[in-house]
Image 1: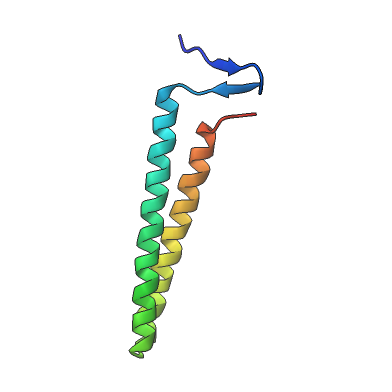
Image 2: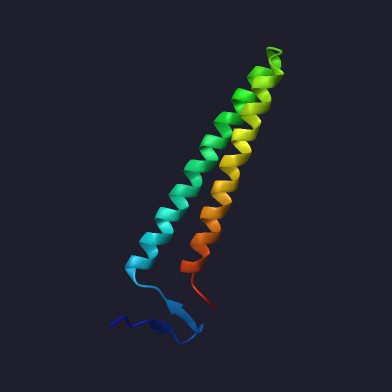
Amino acid sequence: MKTTKVNLKKGKAINPIGENLKRSKNNRKAAAHLLTAAKYHLAAATHHEKGNHEKAEKSTISAHRQVTLSNKTQKAGKQHAIIG
């Protein structure tokens, strides 16, 4: 049986260690997507500088995809957040 401790002063639930690990994993996953997005953006800038605008466009689309994945991961992580 799972019990939830409550901080009586603030009225917030205190999550057990397992919940904190889930949030940590979600944060790391979201950060990994953002790092990949940054790499794609840098590649897009390099392609633009070299005049290869088609490759730059593809890199930009890939970067946006990674940002979207990061946002979805963060929203999924909010389910594990402290309510209060």
